[in-house]
Length: 488
Ligand code: UD1
Ligand code: CA
Image (cartoon, rainbow, N blue to C red; front, top):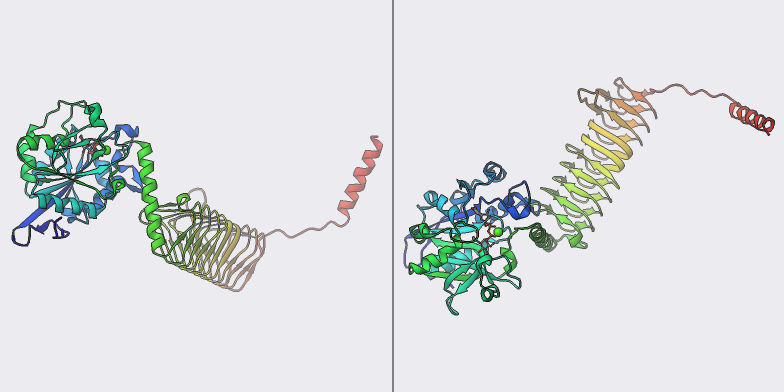
């Protein structure tokens, strides 16, 4: 095994003795349709851990070389694929039409010819680790091979290309695709991962020798093993240390398996960082989620997108939290739904609170059961504990929002803002017709319909006066009684 380490960036030292730098590119094949998924979406945009397959592969590649040396080969739904990962700073190469993995590399030849070596990755195998890519590259350089195949030993190799070694050596005779395997070859458990390293010269001097004489009538990149061997060039193989890393996602079942593997690893990483996750297999935690130490995540919780949770929080069961930020020491009781919301330290939510986009819950604030917020700021220590809708609202500190309060923010055409200043007390069952402002320290009597601004420290009553008709009920009952006697 080579002792020299592959540095990030495209240029790495060829060896201690030589000072000539070697330039490395990474090509990611992502032009295929993914017919076996039976989907209208391109395969590489299907998700594992809430993130497109291709984005995982790009992230691993970008830890080996800088993004400007990564070339993603796109074809089917090319614009959609490019748009989904454009922010990563990688390059794109078009393959039109898609005539197989070998053809994909033919299309990338003009971009890759300036490099010494190219690592080829499959855009549909998202669990690949950068360390494994580096091991493949180091081995390839050490072996001075024209092609090096990353292989894996699988108990069920069905569907994968099989690696035919030259005897027991680490050199390869050929890769045989499942459909072309003879019965004896089908028993070979060492499969082609779809990840390779090539010397650019070896690859492009010989790639024209590929033919389409196979089951799919495509140019198979795998046939380069035999082509290069016949050209008397070295084809090496190195097995992965962790076979689950190379699994592809050709079918829905494989996709779901990969998702499970990914999320298990994600949960383990969070637990290693001090987060308790009870029954982690029941939780859905996306790739980018962060959580601080001593946070406890109960069963059946979903943490999605770029959700960030502080330390010492408790997220109780059946809460679904997407792209939200939660401070330290927050208690989320069962059944809360949050999207693009911010919750400051020490706040208390739920059960069954619904925080829609633009909700900002202040430090120590309480949002209780069946309370919905949208574009609403609730200041420090304020409370909206029961059955309330707060939309387009700016609410200060120390405010009490009584049960059943509704901000009427929509007039059928436009949205309007309700401003509630510090220390306001809104009595239960009030409707606040926006635009309206309740001044500092004001009181709103229960069941009021507030259509005009309320000045500071005032009381606003917006309901009809109560009428009492004494003895009315008693008289009604005796009249009913008399009627019943007559009709008997
Ligand atoms: C491929 C290998 C197989 C290997 C397996 C590992 C070939 C012929 N076979 O099979 O030996 O065991 O990967 O997962 O290579 N793509 C293009 N352009 C094309 C066709 C495909 O860019 O014209 C891309 C796809 O989008 C995909 C990748 O190449 O990301 C692999 O293609 P796929 O059809 O999934 O190959 P497999 O059948 O899995
Ligand atoms: Ca595949």
